[in-house]
Image (tube, rainbow, N blue to C red; front, side, top):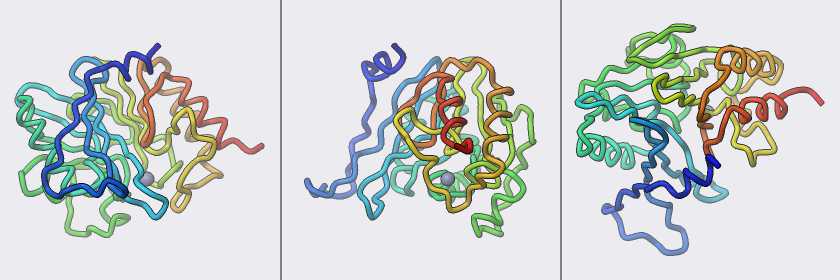
Length: 236
Ligand SMILES: [Zn+2]
């Protein structure tokens, strides 16, 4: 039901105006799709050696004060995303970064230029090799910018956090939550498969009944994505 309603939703594809697309190798345009209440999914694409690959983040569109949970995967798409948020009446005033990888913070410099508040774990700037970035520090478990932030322990990355937008019951699990179609835990370059099962169990225990769960890549679903991920990372 959920996926049907999402696919019928009025997806908002931002026209790409910077370059003429090559019809064979074109990377799809940034899309901003409604999830629930004031929460929108932003989906951007990056060209990996295997081809274009999508990545998710959230825009919480509060009047006059937009909150981004992760930037788009490129600077250009983040620029478009910020412009569209402003046009919707929620210029972005704050960013939460859910871990140090490029698909989470490729557009960070635009937020720093605009004077937006940025939030991350204490170890994220070092891991991202951005020593001059001094974000406000995310708690292990607490509320910042009106959303709940939780660090369950090392899973996909040492600094991975999940974010719940409580009024809409949308949980953004980032890359430590896998899409329903995934049969692997994904990119393991910074993952810890020894601690991930316990971290995944803590995530399930902390967020018992989110209405919508958004993975770092792929399609949103319900809370079954949390148990699906736990199964993927559990020793066979
Ligand atoms: Zn990642």
